[in-house]
Length: 223
Image 1 (cartoon, rainbow, N blue to C red):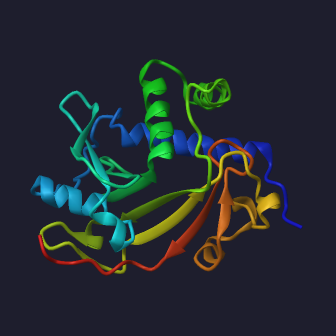
Image 2: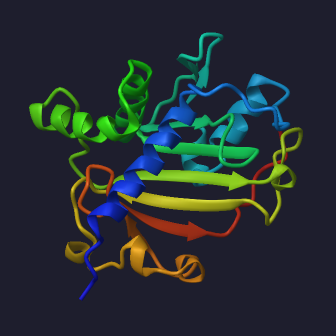
């Protein structure tokens, strides 16, 4: 039987996510640490879609930030994936892609923080809005993808990726529990085990999702 995730641990996962949402919307000032910058919009888009399987990259919508740190569309897509590079991120190269319904939840979380809500107040507000029907949850498991790596993990000029780049897939299933899905939750899985087995993050919350790690992708070096 899967161990139930402690409430305090679930809250910690949610806090980590909300901080990530804030980063994704560039509410924090860019850090003094040198951040590699893509030399063109095309290169920015190429990295933003890197976490996706190759067949989904061309159709993904790509978001960026304008001069006021508001999200803008860099490229309108034709499928349901929304991607963006996070600067500053948790590492010099940080890109995240979400199914559109999940992306809207993330942007809403960022808006709430920008409006003055504390991080601890965001999750209850999101849950209230989903229950009221003013904010939609996905009606089926919804995909997400992430790439994260140090400066030497990616060459923006060529699109070449090294083994330093970490890639994750996820399936978001709001309010589903690890126990109900028959999977271990994050609190019971070691760092080494996470590279070998799917596990559940934020079990039982609106941010509940299954994480799946994979090897660094092969990408085209063409512009």
